[in-house]
Structure formats: C-alpha cells, structure tokens
Amino acid sequence: MVHINNNFTKLSKSYLFSEIERKVGTFKAENPDKSIIRMGIGDVTLPLPNACIEAMHKAVDEMGSAATFRGYGPEQGYLFLRDKICEYDYKPYGVNITPDEVFVSDGAKSDTGNITDILGSECRVAVTDPVYPVYVDTNVMAGRTDIVYMPCTAENGFVPELPKENVDVIYLCYPNNPTGTSLKRSELKVFVDYAIEHKALILFDAAYEAYISNTDVPHSIYEIDGAERVAIEFRSYSKTAGFTGTRCSYTVVPKTCVGYAADGTPFPLNEIWNRRQCTKFNGTPYIIQRAAEAIYSDSGWEQVKQMTGYYKANAAVMRNALETKGYKGVYGGVDSPYVWLKTPDGMSSWSFFDYMLSEKGIVCTPGVGFGRSGEGYVRLTAFNTMENTIEAMNRL
Image (cartoon, rainbow, N blue to C red; front, side, top):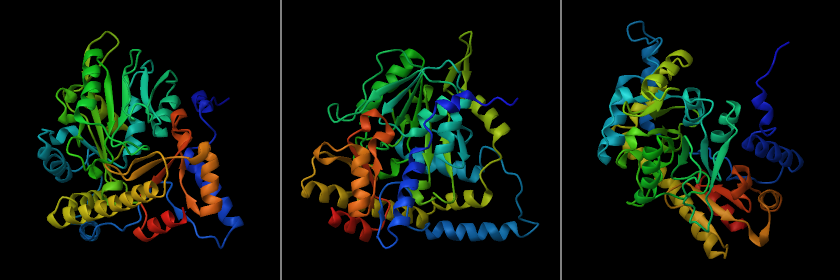
C-alpha cells in the first residue's frame, strides 16, 4: 500500500491562479466573441530585451561547437552572472554580497517554496495576510500548519504588526504582492530587530524591487543593519526583464546567516542551502544565464529600465483612472506593478471578479484568494499593453 503525504489533503483543491484560468476558460468557451483583457495573473507581455536575445543566440551557437559546448554547470550558477549580481544589484546600495552567497535558480516561486527543505518541521511560521499563496501552501505540504497571520489592512496602512507570539520564520514580500504597498526602512528595521532578538529567520521576497520609486523604500533587506545575520533574500528576473517564460532568478544566503541545531548550536544556512541545491538541483541552463548576464550590460540595463518604466506607467494609468472615476480604496501602483482595489458596494471578491469578467471582459484576481484580509479587494496587474490598460479603465 502506497501512502501519500497526508499534508496535501489539507490544501485547498486547486491553486488560486488555476481556478481563475478555469473560470476564464469556461467564460471564453461560452462567449467566443467577447474581448477579454487579462489583468489577473501577473504575466508580462513585452518581449525580452534585445540584449538578452542577442546573448541567447550567441550562447546557442556556442552549444553547437565542441570547443565551446557546456554540459552540466555549477549548481550555484555560473560565476560570470553571480559576479554581475553582486556588482550591480547590491554594491550601489552599499551592500557587500559575495558571489558564493548567491545561488542562481529557475524562479523565485521555486526557491521560496524549496527553502522550506532546510527548515525544521517544528518551526512556527508567520506570514502577512493577504499573502502570496506559495508561502503558505509549501509549508503546509511540509507539515507546518501552525501558521501565524499578520493582517495587512487599510486600517494599519498595510504595514504588518509584529507577531504577538514567538515565531521562528517570517515571510515578507516587499514591494508587496498582492497589495502593491511597500515598507519604509524604519518599518522593515522593526522586523530585522525582532529576528535578531528572537533568533528568527526572515525570508524576504524582493521580486518587485525594480519598481521602487520612493527613496525611503529599501531595494534589499540587507540595507538594514544586522539583516545579513537573519535574512535570506529572493530576487527574480521575471518581472524585471520579462523572464517569465525563460525562468531565471537567484537567492542570496549570507554566510553570516544562521539557523540552529536541536541542541542550540548555530549552523550556517549558506552551507545547508548549498548542500540542498547540489543534491536536488542541476543548475539553470547556460543559455538562460547568459541572457540574464546581458541585463547588466549598458544596453541591457537601459532596455530593462524602459521595460519596467512601461509597466510602471500602466500602473499609474490604473491608479489615476480608478481614483478619478470615484473608486474608494485604491492602493499600490507606485512602488509596484500591482493595484489593490476595494470592491464597490460591499461586494465579495469573487462576486466582483465574476462581474468584471462577465460585464466588462476584464480578468482580475480575487483578493480573498490571498487570505482572509484580502476579502473585499481585487488585484489588478500592470503587465499588459498600454492600449489594453487604457481600454480596461474605459470599460470601468
């Protein structure tokens, strides 16, 4: 008799975005002539930067010659990319990260889930509410069901309060998915200080840092003193450079960041994560890493800035249009590509989703899918064309 991992039976039957796709698919089948504008799932629409395409073509040619062919690469990522990450993504902010603290992978979604492999099963986990579902689901899969929720609401300015009970692991995503809000340095420092005092670990998802506009919003948690002792940071090229289909990201695990054995002995998490990756991961493809490296060239850097600027302009269009049209409760869209919208007339999140789809031909994401505090909200993404973004706002 084959026994299943019973923890999977504790999950909801379907993943949030899979359920949205099912509903949209049914609607399209019943209304084949209806024009639909997708502002739900945060997939990008602009093509890859030319610098990345050129680098990929060159790398493909290299793979066709015995002299330049690459087989298995380092599980941690090629040094040519890790060097660039340290120099361009961290040094400008006064953060000293070394290449052996950087682990290149195939997506921040994967790493924020896989990181649970190195955590003890007894760890008590805290997440914001609303929350990116992967953080909760992957911990439930691992048997961690004692999860503490930190509400982020309009009443507290979407700044979570510290857990009242002791926790071991805290997930933070800022700029935030789904609310589109951000934390100032002083607000993030509160969590770093808590983690230092309680010997806790912060898992900091910085997938949207390229969209930060305000100077008082840190691009990395390591801009906060002491964070290198208590935080692991996740970065992604998906929303920064359009790599949703090519898959590349990286995770930073400082050598000074520690966890604790059962007897209280500190243990470097860098070593444990490296061991995990060497066992379970064969590395991100060479061709993809060359494309990511091209981002840090002069032309690539400029092209990426144009791409994120385009989506930020879409976010501004949404925010301004909604406020002009009299919608109450419009958040985000300044430091992130997401707008968090209060549903009108007290409608539930799913009721407003159905209304938007059936009456306006607009796909949004129901806020309740991100947690209890998301009820009464929907998320809109800026990852569409400017023309479609304007059209969607006109339909409203």
